Length: 235
Image 1: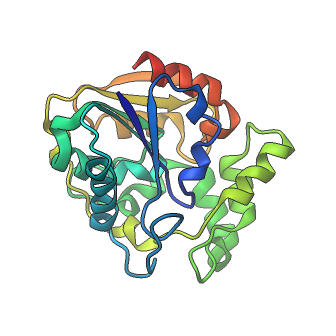
Image 2 (image 1 turned 90 degrees about the vertical axis):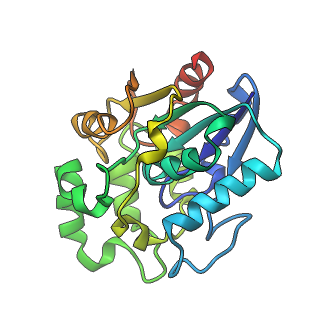
């Protein structure tokens, strides 16, 4: 069995570093296009590119017994991966993932996900994202680091990378999740980026998911890697 870990927006595979040694199985933490092992022009990267990249990493590694784990914005990538390599998947785990309803985009539901995020975005205005797609430090600190020590918050800031912001406006096809693959949604109770009630609405777009609560903020793999690893190992 292999855990395939798909990071969320504004990060790369390195965000999983604290979790990887705690997992009971082989681990492949992937970089999506535009960072790490897969450089690309973020201005033109699409969700299809994300899906193609993860599928290629799985097939190139010859994996056929996979627990597919996604965090946050990875919720828009996992359905496409499942559609392509469903028979290789043992389980799909969504960790505080944005999974918009069929045919909608993350941008269509963003305003209802977190009032604090919406307010902060309004306060920062054009400074929320820099011209290269990097997140403002004030945004990262407020949205991702509320349950962290100053040292872990600084690590989180250091791990951020520019993102392909255009992907949040793409309609998402959830058909790949209709397969009889067990699905779990890990709901993070201290998350201020995607509030618990919003996570519940996201989980409702999955196919009969099991919901597991973890008392942590959005970047649980950094703030409480032991707690996340325990959940994933039970899966």
